[in-house]
Image 1 (cartoon, rainbow, N blue to C red):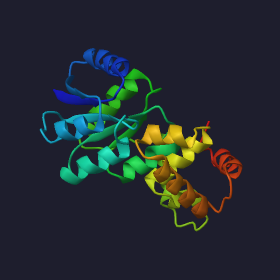
Image 2: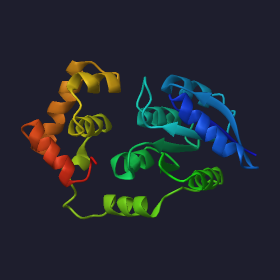
Image 3: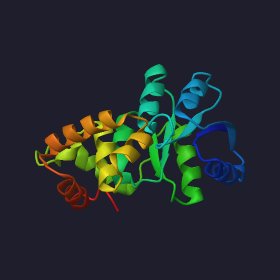
Image 4: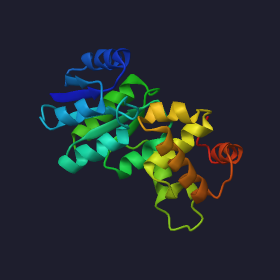
Length: 210
């Protein structure tokens, strides 16, 4: 039996995932977490085989939670779940140690397949993500500038491009507005941009927003 822990701050999402997994004979839900802190704490108890970890948690970003858990337990198996398309966070999640990345829009059987695959010690990589990873590790020097951004800078870029204000971003990332402003200044410098309009055009050009 594959024991799964679900880390997602939305009760409805957790219930939906439990319903999907209840229809299998070899997967059971062994625990739940609503915050990144809870996910890290429960992970240290090692009472399950696979963690389904949401990218967007109320207290800490899922990538940060992933990195902390992998730091504590390098062999721990984590499958990232997100409402974001693969092109936004998947590569960063895989590089940080995730066993796979799955959009919440995926079909239920795709989730079951992914859990079984990562529980068996393999990576779960969709064809589109495989192409993204191939592009990311190419020796081509013409890589987009946003590949040089830190995770926080990248998150800030995507949120600004999505029309979020600095105060909304600070709330979403659990950071002070001053800190968000620092990330904005850094990413602007790295991307060689001067204002938000240029930032939005850059994000659209590189398919970082819908």
